[in-house]
Length: 317
Image (cartoon, rainbow, N blue to C red):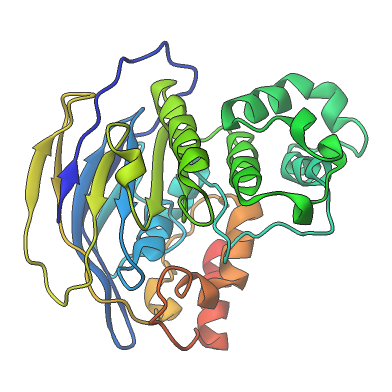
């Protein structure tokens, strides 16, 4: 596993980021390990990129770090919390296409409305009463409504890939998270757009938010992020220890492993009866769990059983 570290000049924090500590995380499915022996520390206010080809389990690892999947082995601490439901309240999902895709028939405005609905705002009043919150989220996500074909009434299906990812970031920011995760960052983007997106994620980190993103090729993120490179191997082959120059913190990075279909019954945290987590994102995660495990692995086949889905739903309740 290769590790690269970024250097930057810290800005005055706007967000309150959460430190992420992964210790020996491993996820096993019906046919073997999805990822194995992953250990690292992402200090608050940093950008970490998980790089890996299809078959390395990068999306499953990302969902684990966000508290949406339970590892088979290892411990995860996010913002001092170890229970999945607590972690879910800290970590927000950006766009993870196979988990929380946009409804193409809904407008940007309607997606923003839906994300704010848990705050109890009646229809027609969310934008008027929380215009500053929405504006700030869109600004930090780098999504310019004026540049959209029909402004905030533009349908999700009319958005470019870059705009989709940025809308996903804006929606996640409305949850006021300490950690935001973004999947497949480099999918469908040219070098220019991709570099700008990496810079947006770097700016979020410089403003105090902890950001973890996945991609196939992290070269465009060089110098902007700490890069963890996953490879498809059956056993742990190396452990690297490095000092992040942006914060002076030490991160121990483990290895990844072969990908396979995940048995969600293995990942359900049925013993966790804490507070209800982020129902907006986790409900979608549960309903699309079988697709979650195939999103980052072209070699994955099969799906979780109906019983597995019920186990996940029981956990979320």
